[in-house]
Length: 485
Ligand SMILES: Cc1ncc(COP(=O)(O)O)c(C=O)c1O
Image (cartoon, rainbow, N blue to C red; front, side):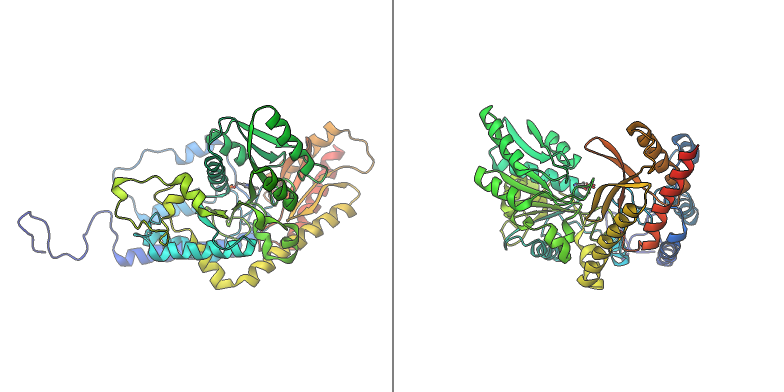
């Protein structure tokens, strides 16, 4: 029995024995079970299906239940989580997951997620997280250097590209003095998160600038739009360019757009959520020439930096603009450091309570080294080039956009030319659905200037040429099979 003070509270116990605590041996045993299951999953993944789906009715039957008043055995709970819930999903890191945007986290980054949760780091203020905040500054500075942005730049890590784009729009809007008839420009291939950010940010006008056959913004079209809008009494204040369009991997002409923005006094934002980290390779650096001229850049380490969800990044040439837009002082935070040396990341964005996202990036880059990242990105580029070649060499496949930043758009089109556009669309949609249902690979579709297209997005460091080739061969086989019916 521990001693108690006059209030009746224990004075001696080192740690309180709550019914929410767990004995150390039990903590260890359950933790090892989780690690073993994750390692087995990673090892078996290439032989697994790429996705397990399910209808709502089926999921309701499996999982609908009231919260239990009395806890169950942790092994039983873990069993249901690992055996029933988690596998009923797409394996985004499957080597034949080529849909949407794949993600394949490195093991050190997964361990870092576990560690940050276990240490329960609050990374909103320097006061609560000096070491972690310094690591975020270091990681942000790595990114700044990779992009070729000037010294003094900085920003913050976010939940993803959408949050980073929102931060950029709000910062640019505030910097422009919050014009009531403000206009933001993006290409017609700009990401939907920018439109959503404009809606949240109360920006009156979003103008989509047409792209050419290469899916990149035509600078003259932007210039025309700015003049037109000014003549109509509107206030253009920002251009958002693509550094790798989600649809096609296309990159807008960054140096030209930067020049227009400088001349016209517009904020130049580059959405590099999809392709930004390609700067780590020589060919990516060439493709993204001019990215360092941006006033702000969005990146998504949970894409081409092989991090687990969620982590995005907003980098600003002047992080002071971000603080001017987001910082709101509060009496209950008066004890935190208030000098420019000690960054309170909560002052730079939406979140006060923030998790320590930088550790996973730091641990994985420290463990594997940058050369491994360069090689993995380079390999994805090469696999996409191989995919384009395979499509061009197959008489019954057609390229709709060439390999760019790991993306290839294509469709099944019988060489005899007997199918019209509508028939081609429904045949290709049926091919996509058949392959997804088979579980062999996960592929998705899009529209390119209105035309239905299949799309391969290659970004996973475990994908091989056999995976890419096997998937395209399936498209051909299924196409022939369905086309013959
Ligand atoms: C170009 C681009 N911008 C923004 C986003 C949004 O990023 P997130 O899904 O991380 O919020 C994406 C996501 O695919 C993207 O490809």
